[in-house]
Image (cartoon, rainbow, N blue to C red; front, top):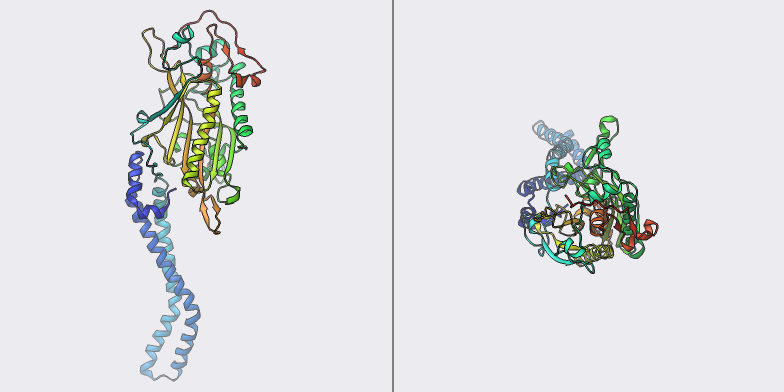
Length: 475
């Protein structure tokens, strides 16, 4: 949630931020409603102050007037009675006026809040302008020794690559047919070494982030109340992507939602709390099952493990002091940890600076890592895909946007409370990460060379799968 004081002081900054993010929100209407609420609250406070003073002053005034009434002439009695009546009725009038203000505020606030939660955090000034993913800016590329993603796989490895779908199906590592029968499209069953690889990469990433970088291992619920989804800014804009459990229709007091990332639970841990500044930064890591409806993604990456409804993810979250420089340092640190992991897995990747039009409502900045996958991209003259990069990681800097919504603060040196800053990053998401692992490290005989960091989690195996001679090009 944005700072209303900043909005009132510089509404054009927030209007421009919404335009750059391609988010439709009526800021002028919000400011009008905000002014009305502030006027009504001021009026209420004035009436309440008068109420307090009346309690001390009205009794003696009425007593004095009643004393005068006893000896008053007939001509004066009517005026004195009117004054007494007015003083006796004033508390009732004030109470009625206060109630009227409260009722008007209650009528206005739902619309006011509806607009307020839609106002996005403006992008940082150094985020490149752009309309969408096509305008993201490549920062750098990295290739493992002996491989260059700008050259063809065949040229470097001496054989035509096949897709992760073909490899995994031939090796019996995945079963799409039975999964679809059970749960519908975009579901899968991992079996044998497919499941072992899935668990290996999750465990490896979790061990790196917790053992080597000091993030606190934490489990969190993946079924949460609506206020957690709204507090972390996944609602209202991402509501269509969440699975909704309508418990209220079955007698429960509130509905629940399946989370699409462990970030929701990690940030929700301290909702409504005031932290000790000396305890910051908080560094959390979780591994959780994630659920996304992928609404609006029909026909896009429908085959294989790229765009699915259920997956597992190691997520890292940092909650730090309200300092832009510190937030920027953590953003760079979190990305460097992920780059370290991907490099150890020997996966070609590129770092992308997301443009304004590709940022979500909550992000001041976002950087993606895209790993190179041989089965993606345009088909070459031989009908084989030439390979392309696909998103596997994303790191976001949010400043106090989430923490305002969650009312998550810390007490500073002066004793005042300040909203924290927050950041989050995908350490690894699987099974999507299995696509580049399997496709990049495939062998001509259909087996897979296990990246060295994963071998301890694969019973020490350097290679898995059985040799298959009837290879075909990827499709």
